Image (cartoon, rainbow, N blue to C red):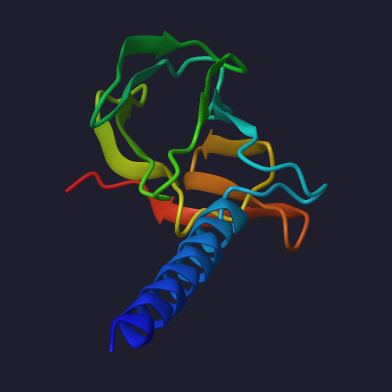
Length: 152
């Protein structure tokens, strides 16, 4: 009986080690860039492409980091760098607004990066334009309208 328990414990330890290895590999695969580099440093860029007269008020944060309020002039960008966590739960969100020449305020809140959803390589690009907020989709190689300005 003692021999059987010893063999059972060895099998359980081996199965646990294999499971743990597969789990770590799965988690790390979520942090792989197109060149196969694991846990790469990501760069998120938010650029003001609205008009020379429009300034954007931008405030981005995560659960752990508050990036502080920013004011972006036309063609100016705000960027930050980070590495995603091993659990693939990294999430950054932003609040932004701008005012048109008539005094109408256009606010928008959006998720700038989420490990499990965001489709970008090392650089995640956002472009604020007159009709809304665009995201560069690496799969199609172009910017896609993600949010229309909310001015209600």
